[in-house]
Image 1 (spheres, rainbow, N blue to C red):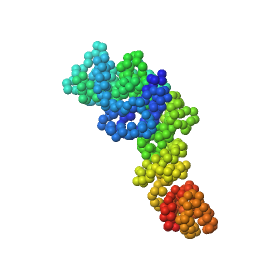
Image 2 (spheres, rainbow, N blue to C red):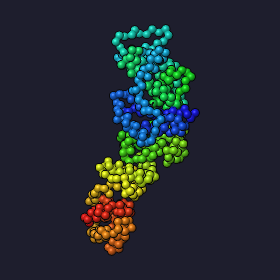
Image 3 (cartoon, rainbow, N blue to C red):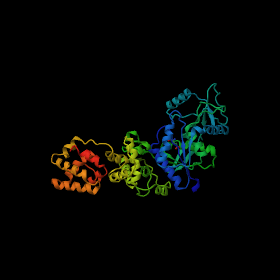
Image 4 (cartoon, protein in one colour):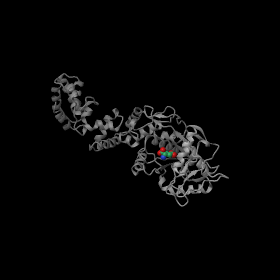
Length: 474
Ligand code: GLU
């Protein structure tokens, strides 16, 4: 079975790759990788008015950042229009689709009348050919839509990978428009509609498992019926799996209101791809009580079981915890590269060198993101502005003489942690002060804040000139 597993992610380039789609992409990718199959990227760009190249680029960049490598694609639906038209023409010829000449007014009136009778509005099949039925006369100058001839009875059933068995009565489904009444070709076929393109794509791309958000669950019976019409009664359908939404921390649908919703924004905000992968995987899937696991472990475990039926909730605190874990796993050199990029976004030109790596080593334990790391490390590159309150509280008359004395000592000492520590110690003894009194004051002046890691380690990574300059106001 392994070589036949083919999954796909099919984002619409009407915006950035959002977290829900990224999570679905991850599941599809992991499923394909687990079974040694293939993963396909398909860009669903038929909404021409809202699709942009920028969004396509961003989707591709986000997939690359998350290392969700695809084996085929990106395929673009707009490049496949002829193929969809060809299939529609075949369906018209086979009688599984038909032209409908209803005008918008007619359809409105139809629905109005149905509502008035207390019925659910639906297409009433007036142009649907039936044996012995006489169709209305074809009106002049009306470009027809093409409708799929949905089976009129029976049920559509599938065993959803996530939700279990689902059955929908065909009476619930009316004859879906599969081509619009525009841009009509000589055989009477306009622009194909979304639900139709998806079916042809999944068929042509030999997709074995359609794993997607459960906002598409209502499309599935229609898509299955169309696919059956194309494949014949014995054709093999893909397995469908509908993953529940991701909800915001307040239980509402995840939206901008809850903060970042695009994958690239998390990249900008200092999250690591391995943390995003780990965190996203746990939204709606579990493996025992495993919370922290590598990409390789995920692939080894992800067999389509243990997908949750209820919606997952976005938890920024947990994501922070996961990211902090992976931050500590990273080498200092790789953190330096990321922090240099974060600093560059602030207009600070810092080389990803040995010193920056040492700075990352010093501060990473207290940070959840590379943005927080850059918040610490920025003070090594730009001057700080101590707050009035901090100055008043910590840089007191009682401490000031010791600060002057320490500064004098620091002019002379060797610039390393041990010598700096010795200078501090000697100053404390000389002035009868306790470490926190002096250390807080030095931190406020040099770092602009009163809490930092061990002072000698913090000072050592500044230049002597920087420290002397910042202590001058004591
Ligand atoms: N283009 C659809 C979306 O972005 C996905 C459709 C599908 O997966 O079948 O929601």
